[in-house]
Image 1 (cartoon, rainbow, N blue to C red):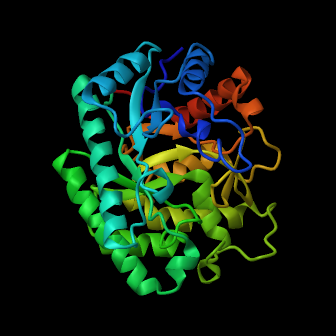
Image 2: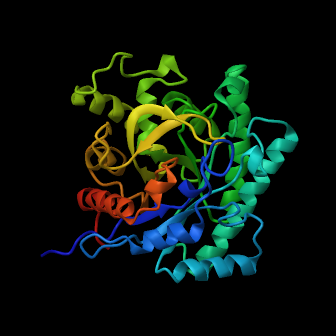
Length: 350
């Protein structure tokens, strides 16, 4: 049998153990070690996850970790046979940061969190455990707040992102903004493109395409003017879904530097203190609207169908699943199986 593709590498996200957990009506936070163990044990036909993407926040991995702490964490993850990829920087107010369109002080704390995450990223690259990946940021402001003055709001977010981009450049890092409908100025595909163009740092400040969140763009949640599919859309019309999804991907693919494989049922969901955003579903969910393997190709291949090879690793994102689901080994074996199918269809060997 011919050997399979070796790129993009397959990663599992650690932040679903934190996002929507541990506060309000959320379930308890799932410890990092639990997720690392489940990831390391996952196996399908002899293939395993290559690495993990991290949320640089306590209790998983404190943003204020010392260089010694970072080295210990790198060694700890390496002990599971895993590499490290992309980070989520805790730029939100509740996590020690502030709004990208907030006061001068809020924007300073936002940039401070980016600087800390970049320093950790650089150290992990030098250690050798982090061969790929960017650092995730958001506008950290609500759609309602942004909507009070969209022009001024996006301009301020772009200024903050540009300053953050300069910090990333100083550390030989790049930043990625994920298109979630809950973040002002990033809540529609058109607003996201306009924001990235306003920042004007291609290759340094780009887009993190999550398959599920990006699909919500076609439905116009929080941005009726940018809706592509009709309100009464018939989900059995797969050709219309494909065309709408391709329109979003074509607009954002040139900016895409990081990619999340995910499934979505076309609805929104929030948990704990997390705002409502696209509902992530398991790979076998009968209500899942995406053809995971096919639609992943919209991001990993260009408009001519050729591999872009821009994305060196892909990551599964499944935020706000119940703990009972996340703590079953079968869940991660199924997810790994879906990831392997994506790599088989849209990967390459090196």
